[in-house]
Length: 241
Image (cartoon, rainbow, N blue to C red; front, top):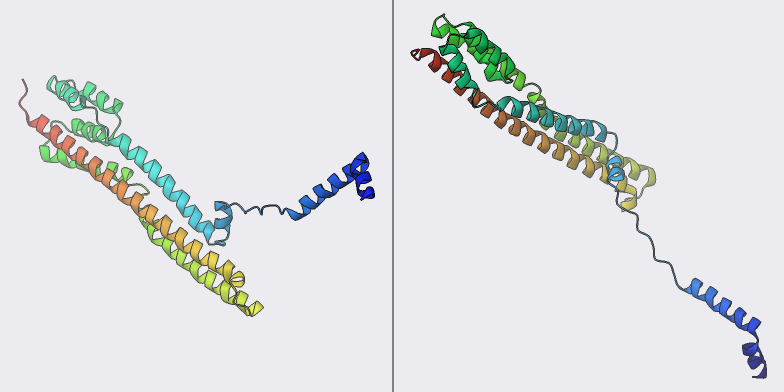
């Protein structure tokens, strides 16, 4: 007991005991395990090489959707005063100014009206045919690359199915090498199988939705062109003041 009291009163011994307790606490208390953060890029890479064409198709789909959306939206905007100005210029006999107004106005309707103005003096049927030919050419420009969206919608799920088959092959290959059917052995093939299937379906769905959005906008733009062309023909048949 006397020895114990000496150790307690001795500062050096006290420091030694404190250090021992600290080291013991560090050994006894375990550190909390850190969980690996879920990263989308790593998950996509587990899909295998088939994810490269699927990824390219997704980028192409988004590009076409944005590019066509902006182009068709811009072409669908019609100045409400455009036909009114054309009507006044034609009734005043100022054909050159009417053509200049058409050239200064963006949009397929302006190109159609410009062609119609250049045919004034000829039979109405001939004017309508000339405007219709220009209209078809303008619609063809607006439809540019939209069919690619339909093709992507068919190809992407097929690529996903190919990735599924490749994943199954990887599963059986790994089992054949190890002779083990544990989840750790088949996880690589399962990842590839499920990721490629899901990615192909998502890209296919995105392309189909984009295709129908663009087609809906095209229908509206064509309707506006037809209404504008009919208004121009009616304008030519109105009696001049």
